[in-house]
Amino acid sequence: MTSTYRPNESKREEFRRYLEKGGVVDSVTRALVALYEEAEKPNNAAEFVRRYMGATGPDTAELETMKNELMSLREKNEELTRENETLKEKLQKYEGGQ
Image (tube, helix red, strand yellow):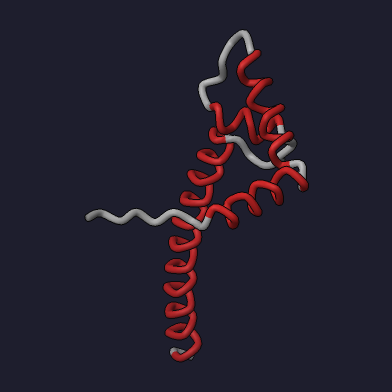
């Protein structure tokens, strides 16, 4: 006998009412209808829905660019930290040699 978890029907109904009362169902429906009515379907449907619903923030391409920039800046930071340590050692030798 297999048993699958299903939330109590009253909890599901309560959650549905909560979403309707908050306008979530209408907002999602409008976004999906707008996507359906798009003549040229976007490559990223989730991104379209986020933007349609007014979500701000970087899109996928911007996010990828930012990740690459972050990685490059971290590498540069590590390089400068090593250079700083080397220069500190040289300075210590110079100051100690007088």
